[in-house]
Amino acid sequence: MNEATPGGQATAGSERWFLLLLGLIYMMNFVDRTIISVAGEAIRRELNLSDLQLGLLGGLAFSLFYAALGIPLARLAERRSRVGIIATVTAIWSVMTALTGAAGNFVQILLCRMGVGVGEAGFTPALVSMISDRFPEERRASAFSTIAIWVSIGGAVSATVGGWVVQNYGWRAAFVVLGLPGIILAVLLKLTIPEPPRRNAGDVTPSFGAVLRRVGRSPAFLYLTAASGLVGMVSFGLNLFMIPLLVRRYGLDIAQAGMIFAISLSLAMVIGNYSGGRAADWLGKRDIGWFGKAPALLLMISLPLYLTAILQSDWRWFMVLMFFAAGSLNAFLPAIMTVTQRLVEPRMRASAAALHAFGQTVAGLGIGSVLLGWLSDRLAAQAYAGDYQADCAHKAVTQACSVGAAQGLQHAMMAVGVVLVGAIIFYLRAARALRREIPAKAA
Image (cartoon, rainbow, N blue to C red):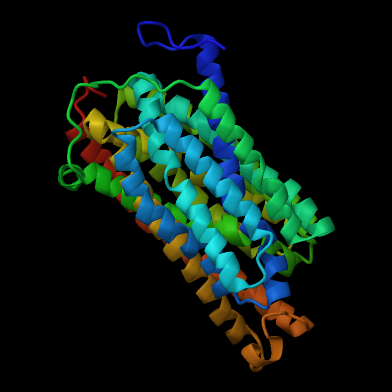
């Protein structure tokens, strides 16, 4: 295994292994985060849960601990080995995912999902900080997008492999099968990836208060974080509720729904993330404002496609339209994470990444998933001609209950999609702020 050269630059071989191994860990990060959405409909039926409870399991339980611990772990990453932090948290979230398979009720699953959030909280800030030290500014968006591609692959693995295991062996087996590989990757990381030397290593790590004051004085950072949070409300909602929608609205089984998820969401994100990262590096050299303008323009395309897809009565048209909607929705999220690093000093980068992730995760996965679940329950009750709560008991045992559950979720997903209008406005404002805050020579 090639290591870094004496001057601190990585050789081609070590760079490829760095991108591959961190990509695989990011893949398992997303597999373990999203398996709850693949198994969600089966869990809901077995444990008689509501969509609000499903939103709590898939969103709030994870995001609260993810957000609360993300900042302290980011502060630790400013001072300690980021390789060691990532290896440790990868092992934690993998064990907690596997333990979910032994849970017997809603509270036990909730506790396991909190444990997954605890583990995953330390990953992204430490990763972004390492990329900032290992790659020059003009390659960071591309490098992070190359790693982030594996997030989308993780969604496909979770949907196809997880869906097949759920369909054939039950949801408990799926958590065990998809939880354990992360432990192996954690060991490989610790054994084969050296800690990259820090840029400006002699600088004193600023206090967290100094970091807050710095980002608080950056309109670009605030606009980008707010916009990413609103995009996350739609994106995370799709991750959590697309498979339940496909099962309820189109009568597909979980394995079939998982395959459609893999194509219309995960494959689209692979293409969007990869092309978005390359485009961001290319456009950013010409005008740093493109880091705001490009995602705004793509959201203008994504929103009508998303709403039209949700309205389709044929799952084939849903898959085609959602493929283009999801690709344009998520294309620039990795690039936006890297451009925020240019707005702070080197020793603030992990903390800045954690703050950005905090806003995106709390708004998107926490608030968005719970809001979507709550809306789905309320709108399902309105669509059902009777006492939905009493008659259906969240099992959708009759045709009328099934129709109500499907319509409620469909209309809730459309309602939440409207927040993308706000994201467009924030991204356009961020474009102007970026030009003021990052001089053309520095960009």
